[in-house]
Length: 134
Length: 124
Image 1 (cartoon, rainbow over the protein chains, first blue to last red):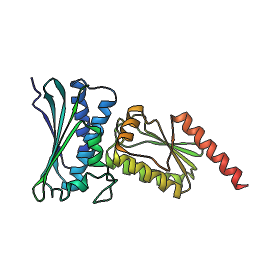
Image 2: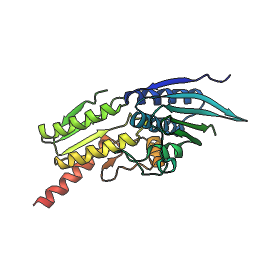
Image 3: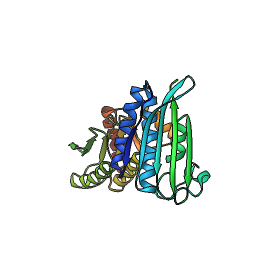
Image 4: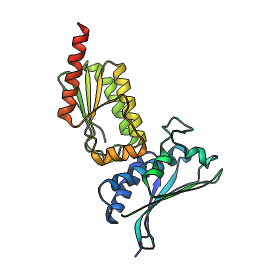
């Protein structure tokens, strides 16, 4: 049975902690352990922060993932914020439109196995990322 | 959650007790900047043993704390970064450049003692 998902509303930076704790708990349930748990929590932290910094509000949706024989976790970050004008630039390490380190999106991509951004200026951004059990 | 700050001789020890929100981190920064003046501390140890994630914001804030305290005349050493946390930080390309780090509280104290001895020598 597929898990039907947990959604965490992101309204302020205090919600980032909740999102990563719930993500970590789901990852444990799905069979992840050791450093994978930390990597997943860190990736959630970065994309949740991205919502707070750029869109103010949004949500993180946590789910089990499967593809063929692969099992893992799927994390979706959704917002109705300003969207990203230049995705290639936003994915460049060290690039930030604010005072950040420019680590968030490219960093999250490195931590996960799959990473996709769907964004439209004026409409919002959806980041979908997955990590598979090895 | 609020981070308790203890005075130990000429040093301050901030021992993180649970996961920290962004606001908690900023509060810790402000507390330490003030306490260093209040207690005339020369060194500060921040124990992050319990943190399961140190993300880009936490890294940036810890760096800012160390640099601020340096401007206030105190050395900072971060202790207790767990192996998995260190691994994730490396994967994220996060560094604590210019910030002292040590394995645990004991090593952190030794680090500050070494530094203060060196400073005394140079002061002569």
